[in-house]
Length: 79
Image 1 (tube, rainbow, N blue to C red):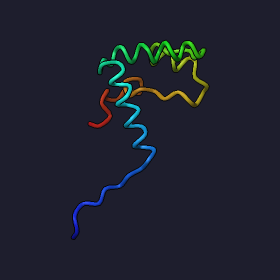
Image 2 (image 1 turned 30 degrees about the horizontal axis):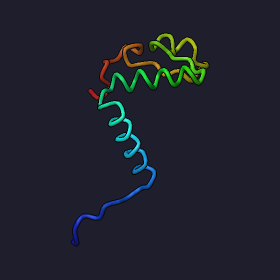
Image 3 (image 1 turned 90 degrees about the vertical axis):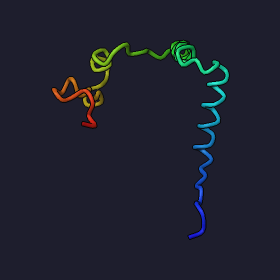
Image 4 (image 1 turned 90 degrees about the horizontal axis):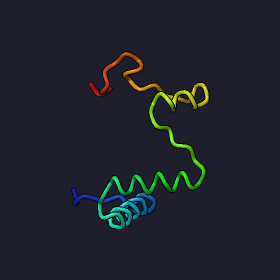
């Protein structure tokens, strides 16, 4: 066998580069980035769902996905 072959996808590379630029711009402060992203979405006129229950009420029927706790299952579905 000849060494490990690496797969390169330009879209994935662009996503990683964008994530790094944003991390550097916000000094790796996830809260600052999240607040800026939320403010940007609100400036675009998007409405933010504050919690799962609110999201379920405003989503069209059949689109909202229940969280495991609402289904009576464990909170961690990987168990």
